[in-house]
Image (cartoon, rainbow, N blue to C red; front, side, top):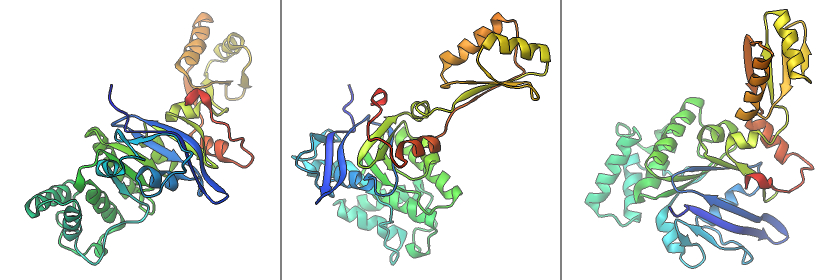
Length: 319
């Protein structure tokens, strides 16, 4: 079996009396996108700093492995396996994009020839060749972000931490960044993403964890998380009043809208439940003119799991 990219058991971090991470568990498969969501101050950036060796976890933490290496006993091997792009660009605006890349190549101890080759390939890959010899200070926000990630890839990391990588970008630049992340994962890279854009997690992540007050409130795929929150329903609309009445009788407890000839019944959005509804309609020999399935979105999940007074008990079914 493939070694997981990241595993953590009981990860803890406190600063004095302030508990930032209170025993979180992570299991992130290789070649996937994992998104960590949470409000400001939830501990997202602290988790990234610990897993990328920038900050030490508390001694009470369990074993933490990144890229197959023990974080406590072999941090140098962890550093060799990862790349980190933070909320704020590491790009030096006083030098050109190419010079930023060559500086990173020097830090990775690449030969001058190899450094120029890698820099040229990455600048082309991220559509920065034309701007390569211009000062980075003249780049747009999206260009700086692309250069930032290109610099991160100089060392060919297999795990990349992206800490709110699209903060401040316009929608077009944000979508371009999403495409870059998808291409990285297609190439076998594992991406650990923190973001405050819930659509971003929904679009990119194979698995999502919601962090609240230092603990993971729930984790699973986007669809699994959405099914945790009540409010999902199936809506059936009819044009034939007789068919509407037969459907209402066949389905039992439904919310009726006699004016619109529409029925609404609670649903978790699962295939099994949808099939059950269709079977009951078939038994009554009735067909809806329109059927729509409505499920809560990640905004609903986020607010439900991180609102005031939410008990800090993880949803075990998704762990």
